Amino acid sequence: MSLFQEPPKLLKQLLFYNGRKFTIEANRLRLPNGSEGDWSCIRHPGGAMAVPITNEGKFVLVKQYRFALKGRLLEFPAGTVESHEDPAVTIRREIEEETGYRAHQWQTLGQFPLAPGYSDEIIYAYLAQNLELLDTPPTQDEDEDLETVLMTAAELESAILEGEPIDAKSICGFYLARPFIK
Image (cartoon, rainbow, N blue to C red; front, side, top):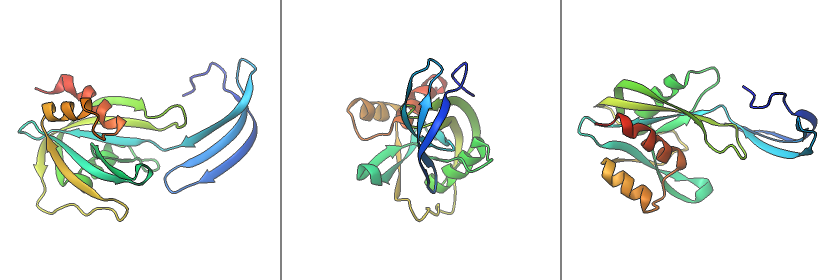
């Protein structure tokens, strides 16, 4: 989907890097209005995020170490959408791997761009309810350092408003889910 009536014209590719989960490109472009400039972008396949709520009304989050920020963030479980994978499949796998819960009721909350100033990543958000705690604890990916955290809506909203380290997709997901929570 293009947001332009006519797409910008690529004049020259200045940089291209293909990473494990995304690519980086820097390009010289001519926009439909005739202006030219250099734009950089992270190309990302997208992510899927769950806002899981236990039958007791607690949100299931993870505290995860994030290298770029050199610290741990509170986040809802999420993962990168694999090539040609439906985001709903991605999040069903990720919630189990990251939290040890399986959801039996799913509702789409929508999708949104994560950081459109420099990335084309879209987050697909889902409400996950009717949770079952699995007998076998999750096996974490080698590159993850996770701790499961349960919070009430009031505790989570307080953490958000007090500026605790919580990622933007989780804040957005929390407020998207609020109208559906009893």
